[in-house]
Length: 486
Ligand code: CS2
Image (tube, rainbow, N blue to C red; front, top):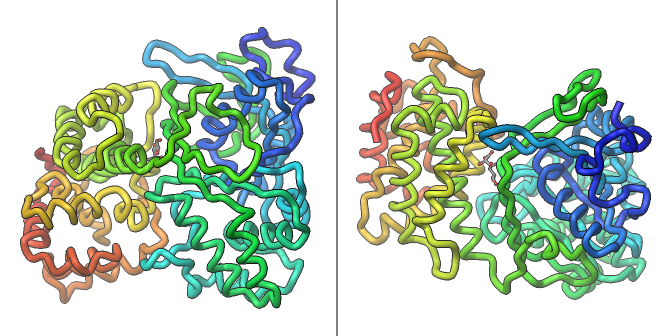
């Protein structure tokens, strides 16, 4: 089994860059999925190694107690395999030195949040972890949020936002040093979005000192915007561990695998000490917006388009969609269509599209379209709609985004009997699934269904755009028959 004792038996190149025994918890992270383990954990480890500073991470799993157990059983070590098109490279990551479960370990999480050693909190909880209402504030009507607000003091909470707000309130009460809370999720203005929902939680709480807490937070908590990037398919714990070809003789229950590429752009607006991530290539800039919108609209935007179109064609992975002939055309056409909506100051869209084609083609990744296509009701408003809106306002037709929307609409259609060409994955998951299904009530025409779906995405303006809804509805029959034409 992988653990600290087993490290000595590995070749030095496969051991953690920084000795885990020398690290302390100075970063608290929420969201123990594969992405964190292959992204921020790597930057933090390399920053600790390069600087000699003891930056270690305690990671909190919002739901999976099994992951926490499995990670603790191996001293929080896990392997990371970089999947190059021509072969794999595996090594052990050692920057995660503690693992906690959000509910059962609430006290320990709060103690770390309120303690002076932790000066950075990071989050990878996906879009739905923020519980944002369509207006961007905290959705106080979401049952989990309402339950957390009503929970008695000391009771376990189920939302990360509730736990974070409660822990930060404890920190403000104790007068601990300033802290930076860093959203690493795929949303425009992710720092500001996180700040807003955390403050909304405090404001809606029954705490008698909530106004004082809000005042203190205004100066003692920073919420920098960031853009994270690395393609890392999700993985859960592997029962009994797995002996990886790259780690002979060592079983690992929590291996992660991702592409070689990674990047991190951060707003240079931290409230206190942080890991020197720039020592590992992270970029600190005054304004991340050009990078953020380029990544969201070009990378994530074409990812989602590949997901729904690929599934319409009966395909299961990104590389399979790229190999389908239309895949590269789709990525390039979407990038050209969307590029005029991007602010200046970000990466060159043409070069960015070339890189995307290479990254998406990597046959070693096998990124499931099902994973990318899930939670579309939360991803599409970030990835497609702002660009679509801008283009429509300028009088442009946006055929690629229109087709992508049609493919998403096609995917939401409840029609178990529909003929599907080739391989078909299980259905996607989406927290709005019941609402989306209701948009296909038999009494509605296809155009009316498309309108209802756009309203469900929080885009009533686009729902009123007859040119758009007609064009989307026109693409549905071909998609339904499994024909993808770019
Ligand atoms: C993907 C992202 O699952 C998804 O929706 O688009 O996870 C994507 O792989 C990352 O953002 C790449 O940095």
